[in-house]
Length: 133
Image 1 (cartoon, helix red, strand yellow):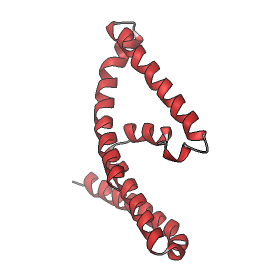
Image 2: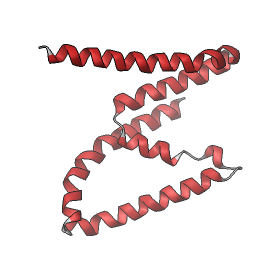
Image 3: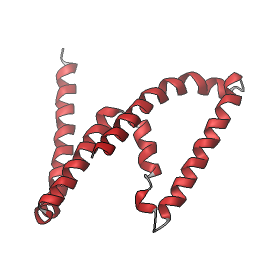
Image 4: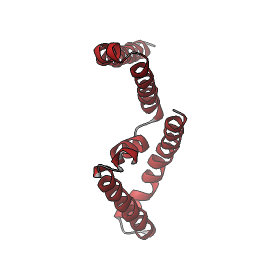
């Protein structure tokens, strides 16, 4: 579980760095400015790492030990307030499955759906309340 939390913290740190950097670098790179030469190498490296991870993930022997490239990419782009609850829910679901596999199988999806809906309704209520200030 500690490894999962370390991954969440690392991905959150990356997500904080990605968007401001992209806002500064990409317009200049598109215009062919100084950033165009500096962006190409990291972009190609990320592309190669993504392809290699995808191919390794498809291997039946070692695929279960390889982190999902999709999860890594989404973890870098989605802000922490959305990633941390997902990680907490995954850890809680794993613990619940170890404790009582039968009840976890029956109630896990409805409970997770309820949490997602409740969060969305609460955010809606807060947005409505903030609009009347």
